[in-house]
Length: 113
Image (cartoon, rainbow, N blue to C red; front, top):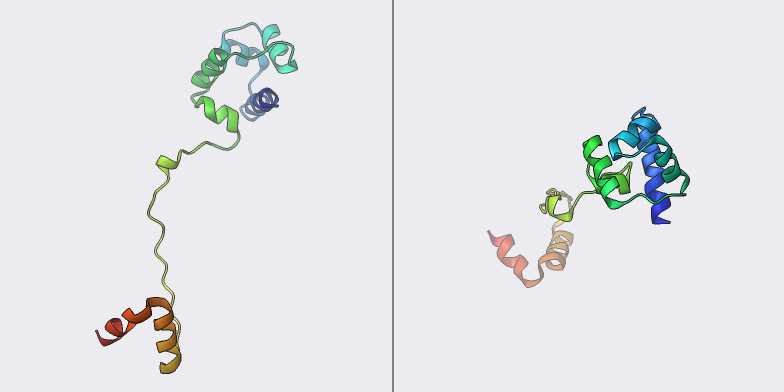
């Protein structure tokens, strides 16, 4: 299943980039017939070959595996979320209820400031 996904992604990359099997084979460092056997599933693609292909295409190995999506590490996702404001007009009695619901007993201090 994993191997099939990688091979299908290589096919998509090849088609999306308008590359021939011969060009892809040269990127990997194998003959076009050997590359054809990889695409058919008769021969397995090695990690070294996958790495050579990624380097030649100027992408990361993980991006071949996740193609067309790009893998983004959690470390690269900004931790600060966007600030959100909400404004609601309420009558005084409802406002006091909402403030107590949100801030508990601390709402009196906020209201007095």
